[in-house]
Length: 316
Image (cartoon, rainbow, N blue to C red; front, side):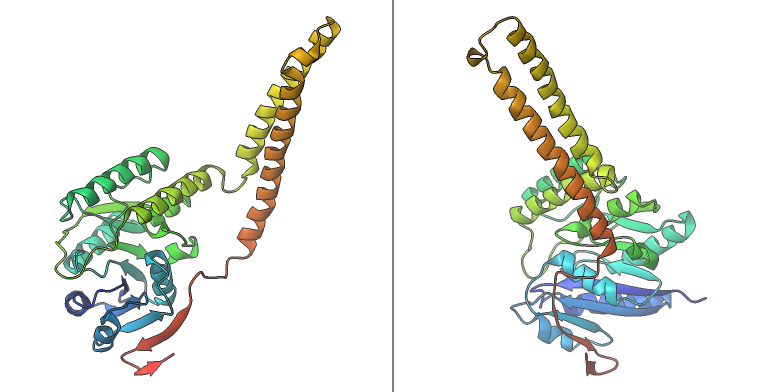
């Protein structure tokens, strides 16, 4: 059976890059002789990106009503993708489409469900490389997804991977971690990384902070996603335990005739038991919310203005 690929590319203010990137992707897709589709997501660009995309063919364009961010753009493109393999990459031209065949070959040879690109020789400025190294170190310590470069958008996925993940926040960079938690087999391949020729980087410390918060979220889900009560309940009972010890000390002091108004034990007892029970109850509520989350996952955090398919010459 002939293989097929969907290439998904978010673009925000990349008018100088999208045409050349489309040409390179088209060349690769025709060379490997797969059935293919190229999907650009225009994340409400304020420059001429939309006009440039409409000149391309073949292409499918998803236009957002407003800027929702890279993760939401990936999610919209992935949901529209119809082929066996889904390739994700950035719209700035720094990812090299010529790496795609080698990544697919590695996937076939090793039986991987995902092959992630590793930008071993990055062409970014020092501050961006430094922030990336710190983030990768923290990621390995917290979630240990087994890859070197989670921030590289160039990845190849088997289509079925996305039956088991939901994207929000800055989660696109942690898709391999989410899939590894589910038992998928993850591989990595060194890829070419090129300097940006046009436009400016959209990366900022705010995105880095959001990514770190999402990393903490994944650490939590990795350990306690199915039963959040396990962590909150344990913490709550631990604090209640201190309260019980304090209560015992309070009773002993009272029986010995100690004036309790001069000690902290009564107040500490009440405070510990109250806070501990509050945390335990929070765990119970989180458990119930968790069940609701798994039962209702249809809402998406973005709004699509229109979808343009150059081959069908129609707007959906």
